[in-house]
Length: 614
Image 1 (cartoon, rainbow, N blue to C red):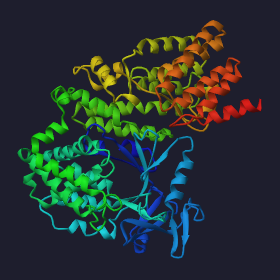
Image 2 (cartoon, rainbow, N blue to C red):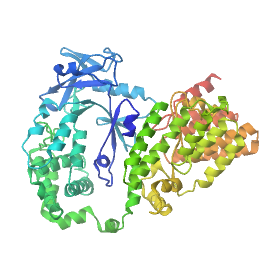
Image 3 (cartoon, helix red, strand yellow):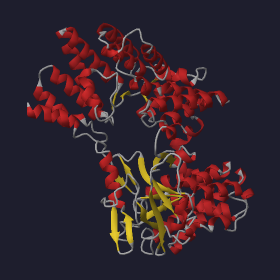
Image 4 (cartoon, rainbow, N blue to C red):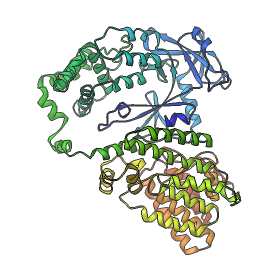
């Protein structure tokens, strides 16, 4: 709700975590639905196109499903909107009309975010470590014609009519990838039912959810341990089997005492599909999801493993899923409040807010949610979001250096900064230090930096990297259940220091870094940068040299730890090195910043060119 309040596109979370399963290897994928593009099921529907947020003429495509590839569709252009160029390379011209090109669309997306290193991963783009996928897609508010019979299909008690109606009203998503077995599939897009599937999983009872977890663990810990089989099945096939079984049997079968009975029903369903090399999509049964994946040439060994699971029974299954060396972890799990905290840190994240009105809209929404929420934890999360949005609001204010201190605007600075320092241990204090730096109060800045460094203990965790055993242990040692969630964050968590595009709080020396984009710096790294800049202004050469040496060591540590914004750290190091007079070393820093994975600091290239010109 908060993210989609501040962005033109609609963000949807999919993947295991979004469905409600936090298992080893569970991930969360982000789908960004482009609201500027309208997709209709047929031409007749286009006359109803009107969007209260889009007063301009919209770009409209109509779906043309392919009988040979029922899980895919073409998108034919029937109206080019005010901001869409029909001659653009994302459009492919055919004898039947103009169609949206998959490759052209993805190329356009990558061009819009050139400073981010994303590689194709199925229908998504992802970082090189493939930890989080980003899918850019479109929505049709109707189910496609070849799925139109799904709501009326005969079933027992599941899913409920309420869920069916909700799915039908939402429609489907369309993602940029064609069928693997068709070489010229550049204008075929995959029909996605991610939102529908999330609704279905959220409608599961407890036993269905446990069964889903068992199926996923079976794939990860038994089937995929065989190198010859690990690329044949995916968790999506197992989820599909569970959907079909849930629909076909009495829902009362899904009761806890019958958990393994339900599991083996799903296994039997999967075995029958592997035998025939045909896995029917839950919404479009004519779509064989095994096509070009499981064939008579490779299904024999997979059938052997699946049948062995069936024959060996429950005890062997449990021993395979939970080896004796890990059994103690089942009963010795983290306290529930720790699990909740870690889950929030793992999935939290939001879009950058660019307008002050959006900041106030978010704060109004979160305050309303907080007052209506009975859960203390969720109430604290709402308060956290309220405070966190202040880091955007404070940087959208006019630069404090040009403001007469008699004006109330300085009160806004202090109000937003005081809200933001409540989010975690130090990042808000560093923005406060930046405020005093840009107003020329260097000694105050240095005192705040000393305070921040005194709070940054080695066993604190960063929200970007909290989900590993070492950091979980550190977090567990630092907090206890009698603290509120906000109190736990204040003593145990540090967040990246974020400077928004055109930030009013960025030091003058780093203005170029926010001219075209945002930057994110780890707290200790930013401490040493600000310390160097202060000593540079104060003319304290020895302290300045020590601060630069500390900054250099810290940036090298960021690079060693593969911080996803290491390019930003290398760039600010280069700026400080250049200020010290060592242009060759500065050039090396900027050049190295351009070679980083993940997010590239756009100003690094400008800094390099400036040095070359000199």
